[in-house]
Length: 210
Length: 219
Length: 208
Picture 1 (cartoon, rainbow over the protein chains, first blue to last red):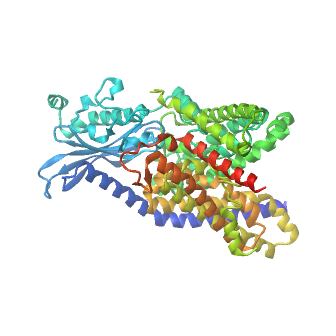
Picture 2: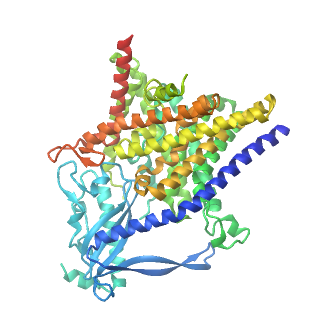
Picture 3: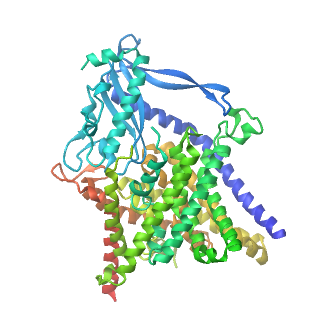
């Protein structure tokens, strides 16, 4: 009995000490981690809307519900960004949004810039942990066959044209990594289609652009 | 986009096999694959512990670590959600302790209930605590089946399925490797390559074979 | 043995990866590029040195305050205590890395929390730190950590160069070079470490 007591005391002291130390460190590093995430988003936004001087986040309140369906509180979530060409936010350049899709072994996040007619400008892969060498090719480099695959091919595409070649579309998929290519393409397409009406761009007008 | 159960099984066993494509659990893969019998024992042990560990870590994460309405502080003590401590940063330490305790517990239980099973699995159980596939699958479940600390749809079932499939994938590789290595014992291999070096090269060839599954469309 | 010799032995004579064949998972998974290899090596070295130091300090402390019998009774929870200490340092690495080196933290991914179950660290705690005093334990941690880093880098340098024609992220082999993609894919790692172990065996056999 005395033995068990002794064991639990030692174990408890060790665990409590380490938990306390970690909690301290967590409170120091947490704001830094948040800042890093923000900086990464800002950098990506600059890349997909290089001419924008001001970027305004458009938010939506999403109710957080508990198990029984009661609304607890509203959480503000950024759904897309408006990009303006001048400081006083009068000249709208386009929009930027983040899309997410399940790739081959991870969630692939892409930042997408579009112009006011809904055509895609530039895209930037934010994060992916696909098999090195396969999925990483989506950044821009030369796949197995030597066919150039780059994120540039998305430029000027509308939501209707977003389909990988294996599904009969125009986006050349990475050889050996169709899943990755399809995940990127389809996630952009579906997000774009849900966002277009909110941005005030009609789907028909988008088609006329073809 | 969510994966269905069948897709998770195919993904974890073939496309993202834990051993040859995620590089997890290599130490037992190289250490315990000399004989077929021990490979089967180890594979069974790992699969069982993996499912149990995934289940307990999922429950702990949902009801204790992440500050959501599932948290016991909210559901039992009625603490307001924004006052619940966010303990998700303790994930690693909590998970590894749970796994260590679980393995100890399973060992004691099996010893009492079935001495035959204990003789078959007993020696592998202590090794399983430091097997990175177990902690790996537990962490991966949280990464894949949670958003902002809240379980996604079918999260619990998907977790169990993924753990089971990952265990099967691990056992499959272990058993295949053991079969090859038993044959290798009898073949004429250059002296410096005998033992581990040739086993690694074999693993490389198997890994190439498994790369073929990458082209499979599971969606 | 002098402290310096403790450091040196980890690099070649008792190299954790090539000689003791421990810590294979991060070695093979993260040797795709030099930056990953160095990042992982440093993270593991930090955890190794700190956990070795704390564990040898604890053993010293318990030998001062507890009777022989008391030490024996506490021996049962030795491993769980080691695990808590190691996990604690791993979480420190996890937090500091995602706060100050987000890109590295992302590319090391799941292998940062998995440092906890890296057999090198628990193996050194059990096999060295609990038998030796603080300074040799720290020296052993540094040596083993450097040995691990060296092993990672020796794989990464070949894999990155042949697999993507780059060195530390800079293209060095020119635009005409067709990367051998197999080298950065999983099979390349298995082949390369097999070849390395074969060469080491061959050297040993020749010596005899």
